[in-house]
Image 1 (cartoon, each protein chain N blue to C red):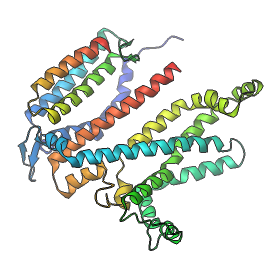
Image 2 (spheres, helix red, strand yellow):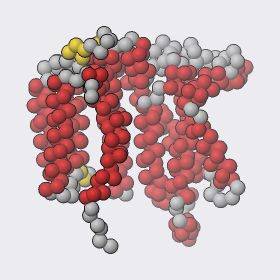
Image 3 (cartoon, helix red, strand yellow):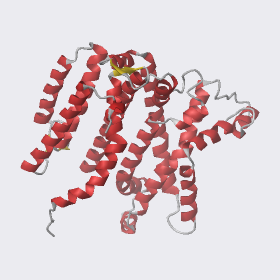
Image 4 (cartoon, rainbow over the protein chains, first blue to last red):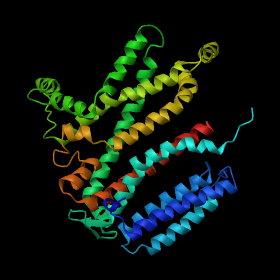
Length: 93
Length: 288
């Protein structure tokens, strides 16, 4: 099959591969520890680990956009900030 | 009764996954690929990195269209949700009036978007339209082609006419599901009309209101066809919403890279706002 119309590049392929691996990882986590580990965190409403991944990814997207708009094109610091943010979300939300 | 766990049930979800992959995931992946490249056609692409995202984020055109979108959605929700509740509360619950009202309410929803746009485009025209001519006869200076405020009023009234019925039908479904015993108990307690609404009808409508709120927000935030047909984004850029700007960029100018970057930002904003609305409303529902 020819997928050239999708205009794949190595960085975008790695990006989607990372997302896919995260989803597989969440699936394995759910298999090992079923139930989604629901809890009420700092936001004062119940979240499962799936919710926390969603909040982490959405937040990371906006951190990267804000970095692009306010700072510049070098996104390594935005990535580091996103990882810290994701850890905080999984720990406290 | 004990729940039966059967992992083979996951295969039942496969058709949906395949459908979503073809209708959403693959197109979204393609848009992400386009957003970091430039093309001059012939399926040839050149790496552009995050340039298009920076261009979009730094352009006034994007922020102006986004502001217009947010204001439009806020006005639409502020009008359609209360109006829908009021109409649903006043609709008959029994008798021949029920099917008549339901059919009348469903009629605007059956009309395609482009036809609604065309109806209102003609309806509002000062030279031949009933609305335009009537307002002119009353001495009101109305011209949606030249005046931005008139254009906005026309689009808002058109959207209210087209979509309030959806809110009405959803609220009505919530209202008719309330057992008579609730009203009888309220009557025995001597509850006022407001108390019945506040403590019986509104809580019972919460779930359908959440659906109505989310549907109307997402629809109004993504509105394209009606304003495109009625005003074409004008006068000037006064009714150019993000979707209209996006089409101009992607198809009018064939700037696929910036259009793809704008699409992703647009998608993320809708995702974020929908998640916030959904979370706030379901959380308050759980607490109430």
